[in-house]
Length: 253
Image (cartoon, rainbow, N blue to C red; front, side):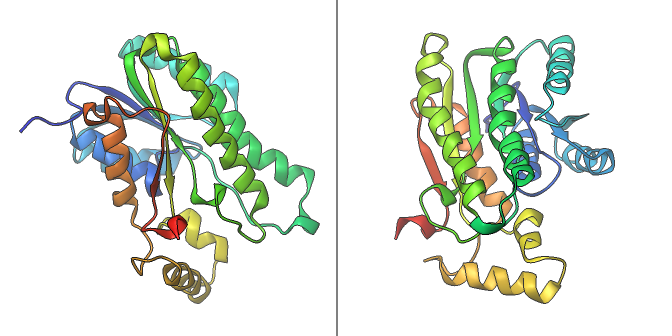
């Protein structure tokens, strides 16, 4: 049985935990050599070890909002592999603040990580992207649902969705596909830490989110990774510009 990414070169930004790590593992298991990025060296090293148990990976310490670090990343990939076939612009994040408490620093941090980082991660990859490459952007169900104290994050992810719609036109001559994957509530460190360090509060958040999902539970990172694999593979060769919700029905009711 042919592995779906055999011989491909992939990059997963923010690949040290949660959805990014699960996706990098899946891509590697399906035959890709996977580059991952992260901002903390210890976590990056541990993730590479975990991915190498199922395939082949290289870790590069990068803050995706720092353009000079993206330049260095792509120069390394150019020298070692010469091309990219799959790019999952997954790095990002955010925190919760109600409208009255939003600060300029909060806004800048969220938009730098999610919007600026995604834009230049894709733009600077263009010289390396092969004809027919797959670009996957990390969206969120928060773009179509109101969420108290999460407006800045939600707005940043709405920008990601807008990018995909326009970029498929910018890149049509190169047959590069751009799609957005929008997870619902997923059991990742980034999700549970929104409730703070208290374990009971974290479980309470997970239980509340599960109660709002028709399937009765939150998602697991590996389930999002499976959907990302579909978008990365030739199985999705005519899938372009979509927003794929992987949310157990959360945003569909």
